[in-house]
Image 1 (cartoon, rainbow, N blue to C red):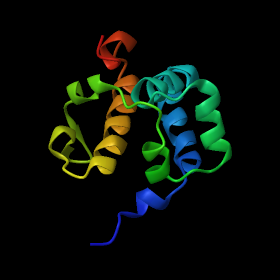
Image 2 (cartoon, helix red, strand yellow):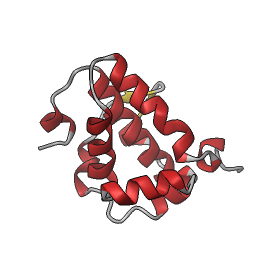
Image 3 (cartoon, one colour):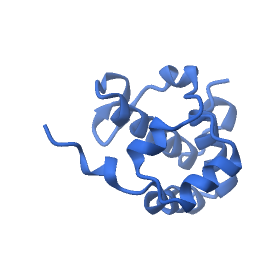
Image 4 (cartoon, rainbow, N blue to C red):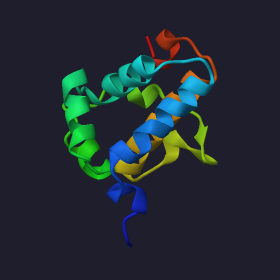
Length: 116
């Protein structure tokens, strides 16, 4: 089976859409970055380096310093699919991020988004 095309897309090409979605709802780039850092373990410098390098999604998640163990607490539907039921690990990581950005845009408190 061929890889989904999102895997080869650069993370930097989608990142502005995450920011835009959040800002339209009164949230900030800083909050989006915090969510990404929480999920992946990247430092802010590490995140910015990945954006500069135009790293693809598959590599972005494969090179993540430490995926947050609490990400398994992320539940719900993104694009009509339950994130907790996605079997392909990289796709699940991508959908976890989508779900967190959705929660941010819906006005959820950061402590709830970050599963504290």
